[in-house]
Length: 156
Length: 477
Image (tube, rainbow over all chains, first blue to last red; front, top):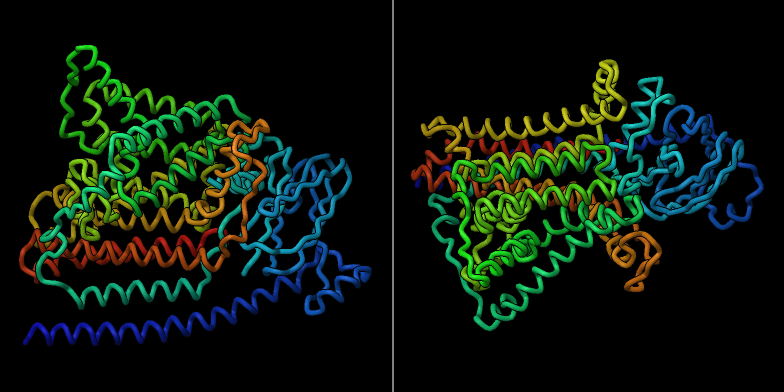
């Protein structure tokens, strides 16, 4: 008798706690989602060091009418190291990734995960343009110097 | 394994003299990929579910030990058992194990010294260290059959007996040693993987394997093959603990089943068992912590401190990471100690005795940590074994016609990884609670005493699980 009462009380307490937690955390989750959306909008609009896209690629604009004109981000490498630290390029899956690497030393630029590699000449530049079709955090690396120059973050 | 390369440039920037310093020895890790942190909403939901699981666990407390009452071995049909466990399969597994050991050392020494193009790093860190954990959890102690050191030890014993010599170990295995040598060896492996800057270098790995092999042979010669393998040998102890999660087991040469979880409650409480589990959980905890805050914020400062003391850049980084690993082990030990000391409210035996009696409750936690942290490594880099085994030395061979393969990163998405990570942590949490409660019942008899003894153990499990979730939410922010 008493045992079952105790059990019932514990179950009720657990359910009550569950409801409270779900409300509290659920509410938190909701605000966080909106907060992070707002936060995401921030960096996207404030990417000052990226050059605006030339209106040349109207073909892809037509093919992907929903996407804003992708910006070509610039990664400047001096003495085998990225200026201003490891650049962080953020995308959502399906978006178009475009960036250019300017280097004062000759090396090979390797985009991990996508497994793209292009040589860059001394005081030259190399451009990448591909689809963000996989998710995760991937290194962009100067293969010869073994230095990470950027990270691609592709969210689902 | 990944992050040490990441911290490198960050440290360079922090030091400010970075360009004058050489880059870390192995700037190229096994992977150029990291997981996205679990989103905050998922973290919150998971934490809530952990608490609910704990509450419901409390509500449904059973009153007499269930797992320890019935842990009988249920043999499978003799024909089925013979099909799996027979001299041919045993020999095949032993030869396979020795063969893989030889290929690992050979490719490590003779192959291209690039972690991603050489067989040794992917095999050791992905297939062996993580993949075999999954296999052990699913199918039981498979490593016992594959263990190359055991195979060579047994073969040597067999040959010497054939030649008419009496083989007797030089010493009896000291019972005080228990699982301590295994814990020490595993710590060495964790240090090589997570701290040492050359840990990904194929030749370094091959030499480490050779040194470990030599130590194991020496120890087997001293104490006898079975005695050393069953207690002192690190990887036997490591995989054996995980295999206890499985229902599949072999007893007296017969394949059979046991009730789920009873494999863990029959763990012998030997000295060093707690230490072994602390290393097993702590090394993964550190690997996870090293990918995010607060570690990446403080690590450069510690490194600068060592550089100022006159250490080289790489040595300073290794010292910093050694401290990080030690802190992680201390945290794990401290969390567990809280639960054990909490039980002293009703159990007046020495703390170490109680600690060993409840050590098995940490096995599911350790498994959850490994699976959550390394799931993506296994899912992605595990694929690499298909093409890297076709060209183990990285010299352009194509033994099996698969050398042209690449890793398919679209195989699982970030969302699947998040859900797997959260699910295994919650599952491990639930299993830990069940085992702990059951052991308390068998130790303390009365349900009320058992429940009282478990308040702090509940806190221990919650602490491990929420720490795991927290690290996943902090990683690679």
